[in-house]
Length: 379
Ligand SMILES: Cc1ncc(COP(=O)(O)O)c(C=O)c1O
Image (tube, rainbow, N blue to C red):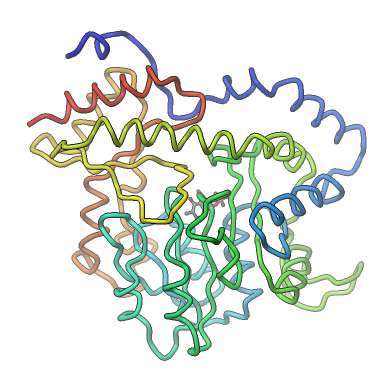
C-alpha cells in the first residue's frame, strides 16, 4: 500500500456535521422563523422552494409533496395513468420507481439498462413497448439524465406520456435541457441523503403543463380545489414548511456542491484509468452529471462484496445501489419476470460499488479511497 493509502482516515458517505458547520446558524434561524410564523404546512417557504426549483430547471410549474415516492405515484395519477395501464421503467433503480406504478394499480413493465451508464437502454425500451403502454418512467440514476430526446421520439405519436424519476437528479442537465423540461412531468426527492436533502422527507413534481400542475395541487390535498370540496380522490401529501425552509437555505449552495461532486468524480476517473478491476460507469456526451452517487464496477477475482468489506476495514464507507434488481424482489413476484430476464441489471447488481462523493470530501480523502480501492480490488 502506498504511503498515502496507509494514512489512517475515516471517509464517510455523507457528512451532515460538515454541512452544519457551514450552514448551521442559517438553518437554525430558518427553522425558528417557521416555528414563530405558525405556518407549518405549505405556505410561503414551500412556494419559494417551488418557484426557485422551477426557475432553476426551466419548468413552468413545480408542486411540492411529502416524499419522492408520493411525487411518483401522484405524478402518474396526474398524467392520467389508470389501473391496468402498462408503465415501462428500469429494473435497476430504487424500488420506489416501480412500486409507485403498482401502487395505483397500473402494471410495471421493465426493460434492461445500458451496462455502461446503468440507464434505461432506449433500444430495449422500444422492444418492451406494447399496445397497453401508457407511460415511460425513466430513472435518472445516480444523477445522470437519460437521453430524453431519444425517449421523447420513442413515445411520440403513440399517446405515451413520460414521467421522469429525477429523485437523484436535482440540477442535472443533458445537452440543452434539465430534468422536467422534456418529460410530461419529473419528480425529485429531498430525502436526507440526496444532493438537496431536507431534515427529513420531501418531494416535488416539475412540469410544463398547467393542467398537470393543477391536478397535482389537488391530489396532494385530498383532491380538493377549495376547502371541503373534493373533485377527485387524492391523499394528504403537503410539504412541511420546516422542510422547505431547510431546503431554501441549502438551495443557493447546490450548484457549487454539485460542481465539487463533479471534481471529485473526475479525480476518481483519473485514478481508475486503465484499471481492469475498477471500472467507472460512463458519462454520456452532453451530460452534466450531478453524482448523487459515484459508481464503479468491481471486476476481478475478489468480487465486489469482499472488496467492500476490505474498504470498511479501512474505515471507508461505500454503498451498493442496488444489490437486487427490481424484478427479483419478492414484492415483484406477480409481475411475471424471472432471473436472467435483464442480464445487464443483474450483472451490475453484483458488480456495482458506490464510493464517497459528498461535497465536503477533501482531495486527500478521494485519493485515499482510490488508492485503497485499487489495492484491495487486485486479483
Ligand atoms: C430513484 C429513486 N426513486 C424514488 C425514490 C423515492 O424517494 P423518497 O425516498 O423521497 O420517497 C428514491 C429515493 O430514495 C430514489 O432514489
